[in-house]
Image (tube, rainbow, N blue to C red; front, side, top):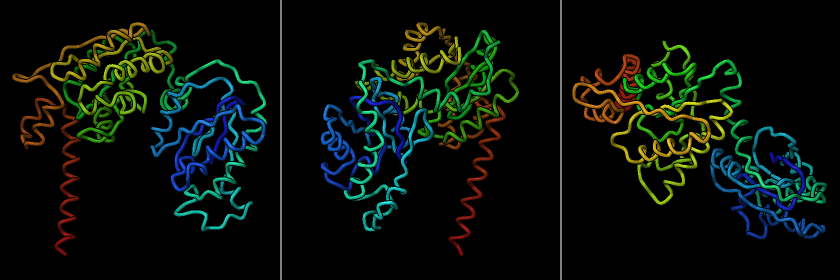
Length: 370
């Protein structure tokens, strides 16, 4: 399904993959080439087709749109998107049926088409957008971050929350790999200073424990606390798209730019609409990448009305409590040391994980013996 959003203009943007990438055809037969040719042959040669399609997942495609600078009047053509304001939908299957496209024009599925199908689809799209091309575009530039983040994230997780009577709203972004007594302490201390505390659990699956397990451990670990909300961080808070160095633990040439982008995005598009005025962080003692991130928050977030509060870490008799130390003990089989580092809720959850894993291994063993 291809959707059209916006009014006419001097640029026509293609976002998506498969049929828009055109990997099975020559450059002259791609969707962007077909549309550009239609514009040139119909007195709209001043229009430019901008192809931003690529072999990426949904997150990557959305992220490209979030960060593209558009002008008022640009046309956006998107493949496989949800409902959007002012969108007109085109059904490629219906067009294929109406034009009696033979099966051998496609490979394993309809979007994987040859140049004949792409040409007909492109001409059909042009007929829909042609009425907009005569309108005069403006030079007003905008990057639609706020709208995308509101539609794809805030409306999903916060539409039912009413913060109007809350004057102090705090936030913590946590990976919790796994959830430790240190995380619990940070949350307890932060909650004392605010009316409501939002815990954003990093959703990117690039950790020792996957997101489903980490999220469950956090929810179980704070279940007894009032005024604490736990939500996924989504694709716009500390993700591989905004700050990849966090997961690679490297300081490359782009780290400063990515750190500042992630923090600014949080301030502008997350903190402001949710009226967050505090962001709590744990003291960083060993990870230089996280330390750089914390310092960037202290520098940038106050300009968005967000105060950054750093809370010292707690220690056992010999060590600072950290998730990395827990993972070390898990890998070395030193399970007796975990009780000093993990709350009972996490211990029980880990026991259930390892029990389930052992049962699965035993089932496979029996199958292989048979």
